[in-house]
Each structure stands twice: as structure tokens, then as C-alpha cells.
Amino acid sequence: MKPEPVSIGTRMKILVVHAHPEPKSFNTAMCHAAVEELTLLGHSVQVSDLYAMEFNAVASRHDFHARAGADYCVYALEQRHAVQHGTLAPDIQAELDKLLWCDLLVLVFPMFWFSTPAIMKGWIDRVLVSGKVYGGKRFYEKGGLAGKQALVCTSLGGQQHMFDADGVHGPILDMLKPLLQGTLAYVGMQVLEPFIAWHVPYISHEERLKILEAWRTRLQDLGHAAVLRTPSLDDFDSRLVPLKTAR
Amino acid sequence: MKPEPVSIGTRMKILVVHAHPEPKSFNTAMCHAAVEELTLLGHSVQVSDLYAMEFNAVASRHDFHARAGADYCVYALEQRHAVQHGTLAPDIQAELDKLLWCDLLVLVFPMFWFSTPAIMKGWIDRVLVSGKVYGGKRFYEKGGLAGKQALVCTSLGGQQHMFDADGVHGPILDMLKPLLQGTLAYVGMQVLEPFIAWHVPYISHEERLKILEAWRTRLQDLGHAAVLRTPSLDDFDSRLVPLKTAR
Image 1 (cartoon, rainbow over the protein chains, first blue to last red):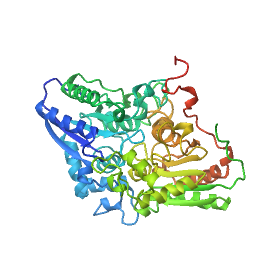
Image 2: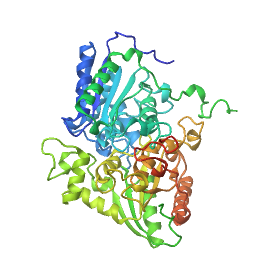
Image 3: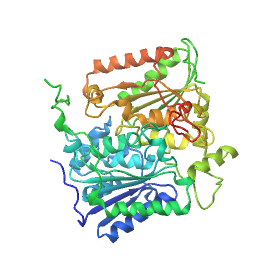
Image 4: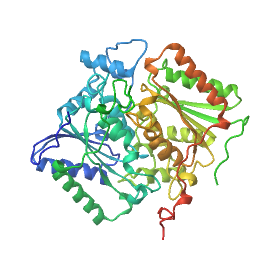
């Protein structure tokens, strides 16, 4: 059962999670443009600006006030216990509430080492809690966030041709696979084609304005967004052996 | 000019960077086994246990005491400025010194969302400084850490067949690409085949002991370790267009 693409004109609940160390950066401008454009379009928008919030990036035993295992912390088991008993740390619970509220999650971040800045990785590590968002056999289309969508918007210094199939780094979707497939699709979200702002530190003001315009246009057209192909459990048996070779 | 594989019997300087929230975890046991085995083999070993150090995971303007740009923080430019003027934050400088000292970097971590825990991502974001470790045209085999080697040791809940070419998640090397290629190879390191401990939360004590033995054996045989194929700038022109299509 796959969620249908959002119809044009549908009002959505949208959570924008942003992480950039410089509030005057182009990346932050992309975040602001998203909030403005999405609000103008009639959507309900919440924002988690992780640097402004000084969000705690580090998953640790301190995230659980009433621990299931006093002497030995298995983070995912503690998450499940805390979800069950309503004892998640308040900063995690607040973000989880926003995540469960939203129809669409938008992640806006600069590429640091071909992935998210650590503060956003920490948001993923801490907020995508086992027992609610995934766990047991609930992953990919059976994940806890099935029915929601995710959109990644990232900026980087590299040029687009460096990420061609024969480019020096290889395809950008390959570099983003742990995030797009291993995280967003894993928890059940339908993953939209990411928006990439290339070569940002080296281009002109006018070129940057054009990127902001293209980003706004993308947001106006969410109902037509391309959806990435991600794994489906339908292709595997219960032990996750591919069905074509399963006995 | 590619560094030669380390000869058997060579004494090396080795930095082990470790990140796990539970000091009694199997992953931490893998870290301890590495330190013990490498020391027994006659290597010099330093350890950065990021959780024990309460390492600051978040790259920010606070990392620079004497800023190049007072009003606008471009993190990579501030790194270059701080490297040049010796004004890196002390916790970054201490880690950078260890990194520049070592011949082999060993990263020991549990897979969180198909990548490193945020605290280790923060170590990468903050310690791999522009102007020293990479920058300008110094990346891949021209990276600032050319001549060094890197070895990833990670543990996860998933089973090996889930990461077959036709497995539900796809190859583990693809999931680790941002780290293996986009980070370790990018800064010039020769990347050894990672050591993967599969299915750890679900296996018996005896099976875990076998993994620890296999890990020690890997470490005894570093001179024969397989090296991953990573991009070479020799295959591209100065604009990073592939040479076969370059005009």
C-alpha cells in the first residue's frame, strides 16, 4: 500500500528541519525561502532550526530518565521503553511530536563530508525512535512514518558534472543513499527527488537568486514531484531473502 | 604516486577513534581488542574515545577564537585561517595532532542509520580541517593525508545477506560510500576493506567471541589488507572532466 502523491492544492502540515552554522548563509536563505513560500501556499509550517535551538546532537544514556536497563544501555531498547512509558527526554519528545504531526518533512542543510552536518545526524539518531518510527519488521514501506513524504534540500561547493555517472565523486544520489534510502525511506517515508544547490560558494549573487527561485518553484509544484525508487519488502520473503531466489 | 601497502612487521603509529554510548557494549569490546592487539604487535597506539571525552560534535563559529570574518562565518575559510595562525580550538588541535601523527586511522563505531553516530560525524566535521587535510585542489590522492591508511570497523544489527548486491539494503560499501570515499579517500588516505560485525544484538556470546577473534586476526595481517578502489584525479582533467571525454 503506497501513499498517493499529494494532490496539487492540498494543504499540508510541513516540518522544516534546518542546520547551518551561519544564520546569514545562502543555505539559511533557502530555509527562509521555503518557510515563506510554503506558508504563502497555504500550508502549515513548523521549523526546527537546530543551530538556533542548540540541539543536543549526541545520543546517550542521558536521553532516558527512567531506564529499562540500569547497568547497560542499549539505545534502541531504551527508546522503545521510553516511547511506551512516555519518558523520552523533553527535547526528543518535542521533535518527535512535530515529526508525527507533519505530512512532509523538509531537511535543509549544507553538505558536510557528503552527508548531513553532525547536528542534523544527531537529530536523526535521537528523534527517529525505535518503537514508534521503526522497529521489529516495521521498516521501508512498513515503517512507522508510512504515508508521509520527505524532501532533502542541500547546498554544496562541488559542481554538477563532478556527480555525473562518470564524474569524480559519482552520482549524488549514491552519496545521499544512507539518508535518502537508509533513513527517510527506511522509516516509511516517500522520498521526493532532492533539490541540490551546486557550487554555491563560487557563483554570483544573481546565480544564487536564480537557485532560490528554482527552489520556490519546486515547492510550488510538490504535487508533481518525482518520487525516488526505494526498496519494497514485497520483493523479499520474511527472512529478507529476495523472492526470486527464495525457496 | 600511491603509497605502498604497509609491510608485514612494520611498526606503525595508529590512532583509534571510537564512539559508542555504552562502555560495556560489544562495539567497545572491539575497540579494546584493537588497542590491545595493536599494542601487542608493537605498534604505537593512541585512542580517542569520543563519548568518554564528551567530544563536542557541533561545528560552529565558537571553534574559532580569532575569526577571519567577524560578521559572517564560512566554516572552511575559518578553518584555513585558524590553521595558518595556529588559532584552532584546543580540542580540535589536539585531535588534529593525533591524526597528523598517525600512519593508520582506525574508526570503531556502531552503525547508526547506515552511517557514523553523530559524535563521530562531528569529529569528522571539526577535525578534518581545510587548509591542512584538504583544500583547493588537494583531495583524493592529492589530499593532505596522502600516505596514511584508514580502516573502518563497524557493528550492526542487520544480517550480511541484507547487504548482498540484490539484498534489501544493497551493498554495505555503497552505504558507507560517503565515509569511505567521500571522507577517508577524499583526504588522501588509502582505505582498507572495512571490518563488519553483523547481526550483533541477536547472536550468541560464542559467536561474538568469534567475531572478536576474526577482528584480531585482521589486525595481525594489516600488511595484506585489501585496499578499496577509490577515485584518482589522474582520470580527470583540471576541471574534473573525465579524460576520455575531455577536449
